[in-house]
Length: 279
Ligand SMILES: [Fe+2]
Image (cartoon, rainbow, N blue to C red):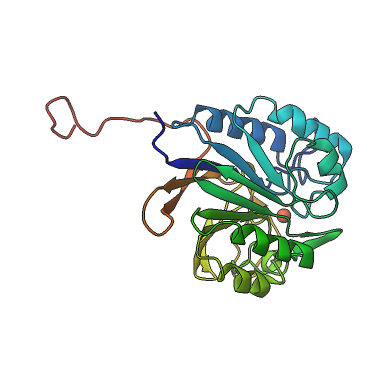
């Protein structure tokens, strides 16, 4: 029986290469994605939706998108995807023809639903540039999309974080017109979360008075270098994804974001025995 709760798995920054190639000479991103899909498929309760917040492939090439499609085949849950700076709009449109992109050309924006929740996926990419910027047409579309209801909660997804992380080389590729997005979001009380990617690390902040998160990656992390000690670097840290759980309630309900580690770990071991005493 449905509880009315909504569970959205967010995965980000897959960086799929051609078969047999490693990302940055070190990371088997294909195996990492396959492990992530196993984790999502076996998660209980089953997520209603999987959102991919950009950087589906790495270079990008058609071969990489073909590899991506093959790797996504075992995923048993509907998927929505927006691009990151490593994607290319035309190649992505061609590779994922079933995606319900709102515009027939240009930005790959999506307005969809998961149960009682509206999900709004924003294309924050600038062709041939690593930083993010939401174009004027997309800003207008976001405003219109959010104005379509005053009662349904809405969750926002995009690739480029609208807030600083303290990791200098990533912050220089941030969402450049975050101030324009903030003005717009403040007009719509039904937005409950803004969820980004790009940094390959789980972070939590606030933006425009909203909870704001960055999703970890299923593969490598950007090194947590808050002092610019290193050149831009990656570290192979425990992989993960975000599980955004929405629970019905007053004021457009509550969203809690869980970091789900990917892998086989010991447990669960019960805390208590049959007599109710601690083991
Ligand atoms: Fe990125």
